[in-house]
Image (spheres, rainbow, N blue to C red):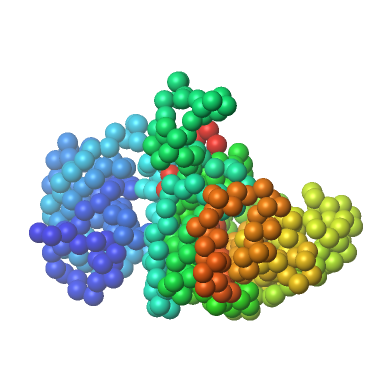
Length: 477
């Protein structure tokens, strides 16, 4: 008999018929009640064993983590908390699990312990829920852009370009590290390398994406990016996924409209599809917060926070106005901020971004027109000569979730900016071609997918929303 997913069994309207279910044992109580889960839902199905007519040897093998197959009648459950259960007629152990050694026992585990067992943590309720939500959000991203007529572009993972100009890139080489070839100047001779030049893992698909937008009109990329940034924080990963739309003929206002509409769409999509998982994670978050001092607890529960983003228009505020607000605010005057805001030109930190969203405006915020000297070379210079058409979207509890800009479409201005920053024109000759031949106003943004998953799931550490986190000194699994 073909097995039926637990989710479908629990949603069935057809009882008193024989079914087969396969999955992993979560708990086994009183030699009688198996909580079975197959990953299709946060909810287990109870399987009731006739222990008097089941071999003792088989009962001993029904342990947490064991893979089993059960066949029996689907009936209305007499117990509280579940609609249906399976009255087991036949039980088969598909894969044993040593109860003494299986790490994912039915008890509370620390998130650090679970990260050390990332290959098994998805068998817990919390991580099963997170990964199902991540999957649905990924589908929502494609659904949104495909419905809007965007073209999905796969930009290269291996590149010679540093889109951010920060230089924090993982180098790629096939040269023997214990005997590197040198040129006449004594430097590494990359001409002898696989690609014949210095190459890296990409930090962004934006520059390549721009070239496609200038032919296809509106495109998006959604793929892995890499940063060799030695940041051991709860918000940084060395390998993460980026969503980067790019649209020809869009100015900064159009860009902000697109980003706001996109974010609200994918969040609503997840709320519509992942109700049980989100409800579970909300309960988990409330339990976790009980142990925190009142001042450190979230002002909103998870679902309330998600609805907050859906129901509030994003407030658009210039960087200059934001600096005035922050300079005059109580936490700054009383030196409660770790980074005190004294003057225009300061690079805003997460504490400042969260203050603007959570305390001052009490809604999502889009900051725009940043100082040119703290933003990337490709952003369009404003007429004042000191600010660029950049925008960041700030969310409660997380700070920046989106960064974007109107791109500098003027060839001469772009070349001057590159020279000022020491960026090699010859290295980006192909990028400059888009300004030589048929240049036009265009804009785009980048959204770190894990930051989005972090916000939607209510988790506090970005390492807990990606299957196998890559961080400094950690590339296990």
